[in-house]
Image (cartoon, rainbow over all chains, first blue to last red; front, side, top):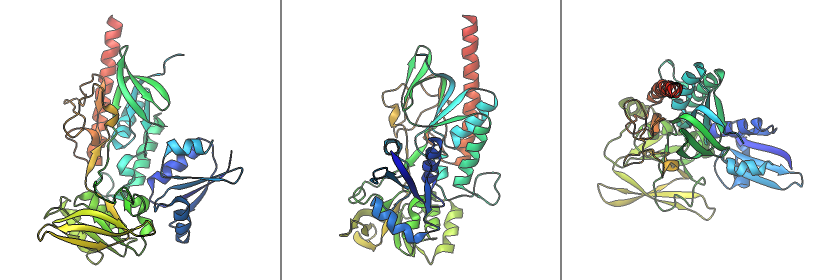
Length: 82
Length: 318
């Protein structure tokens, strides 16, 4: 079960738009961290994902475990939010 | 269970398919689109589009893609986020195996576009997304005040390099041949960025090397005029060396491909599989322009309408 979803994005990232659109279509709320607005949080995104890339979607489960999905990857995102 | 049958199924939702969908849905032709990547395709991940007619000041690729999507949805296009795995003929219909299950169509448009090619050099896979990138608008923001290599000499390489100068301290642009394939206007624009972009002609991109922290530390190339290796001490590399058509899912189908895997069509944009059409960057002979893709999309829509009318006529006379 999902407790919270956070997405790290940038202004120009089309894949970020797709992740947000897909989550919305599936009825999931999310918090967005725009790295153009908050560049000081880039390191946080990198440490969580191990990649210098957005979108980074952090799915926090009810037991506080975290699942990280990088990019617009429905094969990973769909099972992670169920 | 009853079959899910549609008049038209479009594979892809880039400029070609979205334009086709505007035409078909405006005529009340039941249309669904399947997109496994980004709605708007490569246009959506392009920072700025200056050569699409009707936008005298240019338009952000993401905004253009969103406008096309909105226009298609306004008339009833059903865009599904999923993947089509195969196409085959079954009982006079096209059967598409998709992530949403099997779907049947009277006509199909393949407009899956192309993706950026990879270099195929040591280090490219190892440092993927940790210094090796193919999307400047996605990943450029991670390179504030850093040094970069961009590999390529075409329009994308130049446009994306210009975009990356918003973040990067300096860019070494490695061009394999002694000239650029990019348009004259972009090459002239390069002058504006001469303090930030250094062009290295006749320079191949050979290897990507990283450090202990698993991030890129340098790119090694070869100066073809001297045959000597050249080291570029950089934090990352963006690769824009051309396009590869997204046609892998057509292997084993009746849709004929050319020698580089692009879809062959006749003058009506119909493939070798009757009732299956192709448009945009995936079509053999495509000019890889957004304006051409939207034009081909409109043409394909009219051809599909004709195909549906012929099907209807045949059914009513038999």
